[in-house]
Amino acid sequence: MKIMVAIKRVIDYAVKIRVKTDKSGVETSNVKMSMNPFCEIALEEAIRIKDSGRAAEVVAVSIGPAQSVDTLRTGLAMGADRAIHVEAPAAAPLYPLSVAKILRALVEIEKPGLLLLGKQAIDDDCNQTGQMVAGLLQWPQGTFASKVILDQEKQVVTVDREVDGGIETLSLDLPAVITTDLRLNQPRYATLPNIMKAKSKPIKKITPQELNVEIECDMEIVQVTEPPKRKAGVILSSVDELVDKLKNEARVL
Image (cartoon, rainbow, N blue to C red):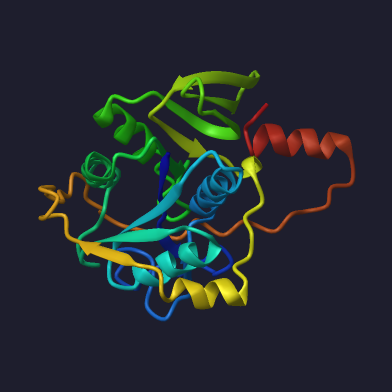
């Protein structure tokens, strides 16, 4: 079975975000970029399934500008067998529906038995692509997966997902779409030998036009602003003073 994993290049989670002076977005020039942490977990799960002998190949896919190749090389160093880079200009914003259409086109070409994605990207927090591509493919889906068990003989995958009431267990017929949560696994570090091997692994380049997908901007960002700074806390002398402030200043009582 083949597993396809979608990975996204985002601003590194440890970087302090700065808003552009014209408030059109966040500053990405000369900023450290890395693989989206949720995508990293999805890729790690795919590699673990392959290592256990239940999959034959792991294909990493990234959509974006030329620099996305660096993210794909990281995925190849982690253990993916090959990669596909869908070149999209940096000036063209990629929204979830456009990404889902591109992934659907790639699935129809590659025909994987399982499509893994991070549940969301830390730059836009949309949490929509996995659900949209499952709808376009008409495949069963398991979102926010905290445990994945693949049964090749029965051609099903069991997914534990965290919900408000506890843990929900789903049994999905393959092929299926799964989006991964933080508690699923701990991604491995790419070792130096694997980083060297990744340089010789193939990365196929393709454009949305070759996939017959038109990138459409169905949303418009009007303005991006930083959240208001939090006011300093105050020390109160009594419970009565606290109640008074909650009632008359905060107006929550």
